[in-house]
Image (cartoon, one colour):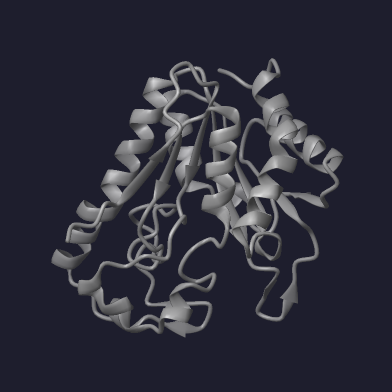
Length: 245
């Protein structure tokens, strides 16, 4: 059975927003035997961004915006990493060894890029080219505690440019009742918004990344509710003078 590496949603002509989700799924094709991990490990935060796909899909549906979602686990190949990044195909994640990634030769690396990484980024390029005046917004989620350190907030706005746009989004999220931080739990200034930055710069569009605490997203109904609470913030962002090119 073939494995489709990309999921597309909401392909609406003239949309002012393009959504992406680089870590949308924990899925691994059968021939990879779960990369040697238990199914529960793949479905934990090391294998995907819990709830992020549901948020992206609900925003896509409500705002009639196209969404591009990676259908393969980040552990096969991480679509939010540069090709030179040591964690592109990680040998371990947050202290958990990934047996299926322990000894990747150049041929296997190239095969994973061909099957999972390249089609994803080609789909993002196509979506942005089809909506050249749209804002590019990447949707992710984060675990509420990492290495014993709590992350006591709800949403992070990540950016390395477009500061005014980031401030506008953060203000809208705060108005929705969420505790919001700028460039946390990761910083766009450290290169950790690779996909949004790469496609944004390539096509000359504005871009941001949104990180949502996955404690809010554990059930699909909860994730959809979060997306609906974020609608006004995202819609105002798209409608604002800083939202386009």
